[in-house]
Length: 111
Image (spheres, rainbow, N blue to C red):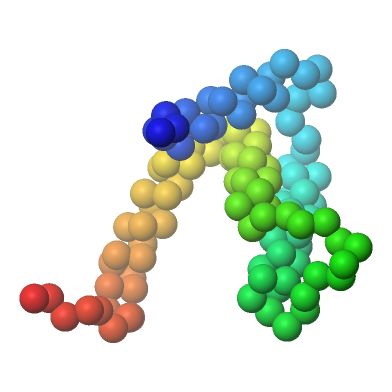
């Protein structure tokens, strides 16, 4: 079983990796473009698996997991470069959903 990593661990691991290169992190605008690019690649894979557009025989097989990993890596890079703690960001958005949207969706009945 793989070691469990926290978001802080993931952010530190990416920071250590990027820190070994003189170029460092890309600019926020460049990373936004990379996020868009990776999201497009994920969309293409999802469309191949679940949509009406099957892959051509000449297209290589890529996993949705790989595309999600690419997207996560760039997201972590962007957060790190902007000094955003993703655990704090997650906690903030979950609190928002639990309060603002607390009665928005139909819940399963409690037994």
